[in-house]
Length: 69
Image (cartoon, rainbow, N blue to C red; front, side, top):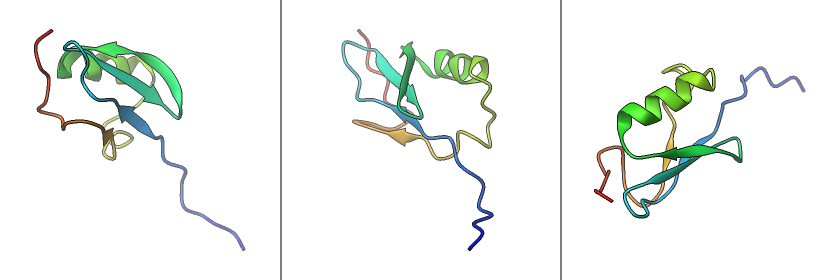
């Protein structure tokens, strides 16, 4: 059986801790961000596009949850 479904990059943005959120891509720790702009920059540097990041696994809060440190 030939599965032609393209592999999806799994992006996990972890629960906020002291205003920071750790980011993992396919299980690899790629950094810590404090706001959506930093997250976008980190994902861009990792070579991910908007299409790749549609299914971000937001843990402990969604994309609008960026508590101050």
